[in-house]
Length: 483
Image 1 (cartoon, rainbow, N blue to C red):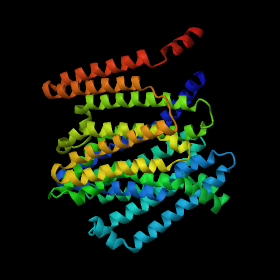
Image 2: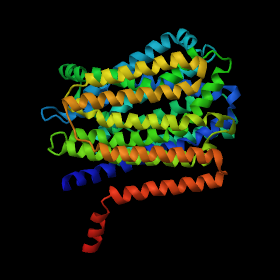
Image 3: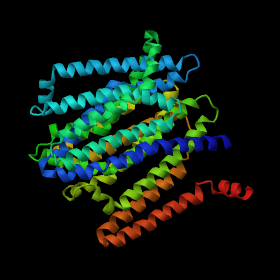
Image 4: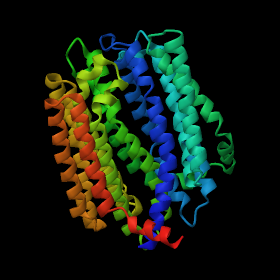
């Protein structure tokens, strides 16, 4: 147990550093949401364009990296592989795919722009295609930083990227008064290019060359992860990609913009999950040969669920304050926030459960789980968005992540059984659900100040329960006594 707790401290430290670039960084990036929603009204549909375009680029990003980040971690930690050779092989492979993608986009820019509904603005497509290609290539050097435990450099570059992006957006939309959503894409291209140049030291490792035999072995491992990644990202963005095709109303861009803006609030949970993932993935692969690896995963799962449930209650409890991150004409979509946040919690649990097939080199199971979940999401969107609008998008994500989570748990207990603390997790889940019901009803029945006061008390009760039952306070107390 002492070894497990020491590992948890290391994981917590790395998560905190990665969280600086993920949570704090994205929070700073949230400054763009009130900026965009102030300069682009819901009726104009400008933010709907941004929502749709970034959803497309997220999908393309996964296609261009084709599972090479996770594959790099797996092969770089194998005793019979040279980490530098693995890095250079992965980098050249991804760079080749990105180059081919850019060439094809430039050759067929007119039909591609027309298909996506941007025939009058092909520059939007060109800018975002270049950006996603650059981001795909630099994903491998960033993975290398994580593998080398250079969390501070990783966090610094991520924050610098966001700082440049915010500064240029403020110049374009605040000082110059632009309202065209295209400038958001041009700014993103500039910031991505600058940060990529800052990784020149890592790019120098390309001198180790390209090993075809190694790439074949890596591809045999990565192709299920690539399918898993595509299905996984579709679980997150399929609604925003499909919405323009399945929603029949004339206010399509407005509705998509409202949904995209309110989902940004719920993405606080995605930040927490991403910060945890950045630290946890290389950590687990590095400890894969340790005897206490399963026990460490049990402990990590429990604390992850506790922390994300607390974040859920905080966002729901203070939604009347947080909603000011977006323009008032977007507040009508706030009802999707708790649904999307609950879905993100299940996605995080699914990520935690995924290590059994990654460590057993049975990544095809991940492709199956995510494929089924993606099918659920697409079907619900196609069937219910035309009649229910964006609320169907939120419930589709919930259903999809729940499906993936349950499938991974059930099959995982057959192939690699792990004794998760189900009773304790269930108690926290029930407590959070009851507190949410109180918060929701209080918001409907009480004045805003009274509702916030009630929510604060409920959150403090949740925290007190965590501190009493699950935080090793005695350990810290004993240390203080020894001093």
